[in-house]
Length: 219
Image (cartoon, rainbow, N blue to C red; front, side):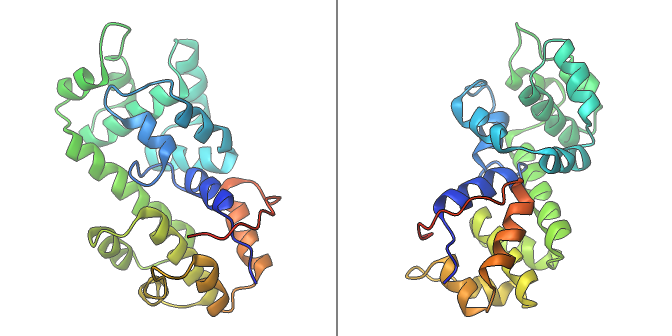
């Protein structure tokens, strides 16, 4: 039986795709307009971030480790850079022009207003980034992933279905249909014949931790 823990899923959720706020708490804190900019959820999430996750952020939001370093020297946090990059992507503006609007005297709501970005537009950018990241990581059909998101499936469930679809060579729609109220992703993996080592290797590669052997069942 595959031991697929809530703790492991939590780390996966934070570490895999930090670009979908409704699914991943690290970005929810980072991108919440004028929210708690230094809340524990963000710092806990970023604690799980490794070079692979940062590489994902760099690619999807067109920012680099050098950008993080340079903006840090100017007094901006890593969270500020990610938030500004999301707004920049939504507005079509440069990261520098967006982040320069954020000062000690201004809010992110003010910044969004200055570049004509709404909350809905920001949410759409997050959703698009989530979909792109899942497709790139797992090879899942983009239309299928997009439709599942539109149907209201949770980001975690889409992510798990995509990974198990890759490991089992099954369509993502077939895999997510196997997840019921009365079973777990652990059960789905077992039914698909996905062995523990393969699953843990795949999940570990997403958030840089291959040593989580927790055995709590995932609901």
